[in-house]
Length: 321
Ligand SMILES: NC(=O)c1ccc[n+]([C@@H]2O[C@H](COP(=O)([O-])OP(=O)(O)OC[C@H]3O[C@@H](n4cnc5c(N)ncnc54)[C@H](O)[C@@H]3O)[C@@H](O)[C@H]2O)c1
Image 1 (cartoon, protein in one colour):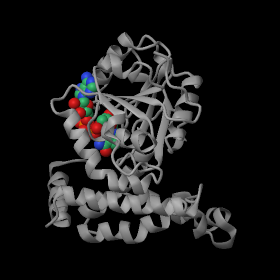
Image 2 (image 1 turned 30 degrees about the vertical axis):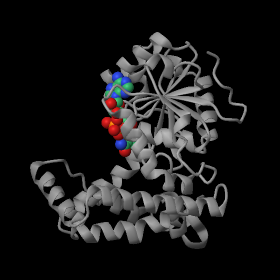
Image 3 (image 1 turned 90 degrees about the vertical axis):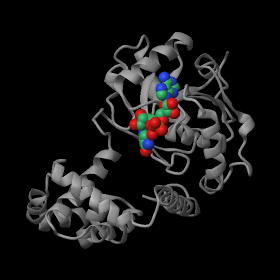
C-alpha cells in the first residue's frame, strides 16, 4: 500500500510495541490527527493502551491543544505486524530495551515491509550501529528517543548508526517535527545519548552527596527542584554558566572562574552501585516517597510536565531558549 503522504495532513504511523512508550507515541499521533496501526503480542495490550489513552487524554489535550475532545479510538487499530508496517510513513519500534530483541523485531519488520520504510527505534541508550548490524536495509534505521510522557515532552533525540543514510535522518526529522517534536540531532552515536548522560551526571553527584553525608535525601531533592531546575527552564546548563560571568558572560567565566570550576569538577564524586549504595538509595527513596504511591508520583510528575509545556505554548516558538 502507498504510504499516506506527508503533505501536511494526517498520515498513517506504525507502532511496534505498545508499552509505556508505544502508548505514548499512540497518544502523540492520535492527538495530532494521525492514524495509528499498532502491533504488540502481549495479552491485553490493546485494552491496556486504550485504557491508558482514556486516563491521560485530559493531559494530552493540554499538551497538544489541537487534539480532539474525546480519545479518537477509531483512528487506532491493533493488528498483525504485517499490517502495522504497511502503508505507513514510519514505524516507531518501542519493544524491550535489548539488542537481540530489537534485532528480532527489525527482522520481522523487514520480512514484511517495503524496503524504503523508515524504522525509528525508541531505544533509551543502545547504539544504532549495533541495532542495525543484521538488517537487510540498515540505512533506514535511526534512533528517535522520546522522553516520558511522550505526548507532552517536546524533545526527541535523533541519531543514526554507521549505516544510517542522511535521507533517513532527514525523513525522520520531518516526521518528528510534523508530530510537534523538538528534534535534537546527535552528531555521533554515544551510549545513553544526550539527555540520559546529562541526567545521570546529576544523579551521580546526588548519590555521591548522599553517601558522603553532605545532605539528607529530602534536601538533595529540594536542591534540584527549588534551586537547579527553575533556572534551567529558560536556557540550560551552558546559559546558566554564561550568566555567572556577569556582563562579560562566558568570557568573564573563563577569565575569572576557570581554576575554581576545575577545582569543583575535580572534586565531584564517582560512586558505584555497591550493596551499600543500593541499600542507601532504597532507604532514601522510601523516605522521599513515603505516603505516595508510584501512580500518584507519576501523575504529579506528568501534571507538572504538562504545566510547563503549556507555558512553552503560551510563550511561543523557541521560548525555552
Ligand atoms: N520507559 C521509559 O521511560 C522510556 C523512555 C524512553 C525510551 N524508552 C525505550 O522505549 C522502549 C520501550 O520501553 P517501554 O518503557 O515502553 O517498555 P515496556 O516494557 O512498557 O513496553 C515494551 C512493549 O514491547 C512489547 N513487545 C515485546 N516483544 C515484542 C515484539 N516482538 N513485537 C512487538 N512488541 C513487543 C511488550 O509486550 C511491551 O508491551 C525501550 O527501548 C526503552 O528503553 C523507555
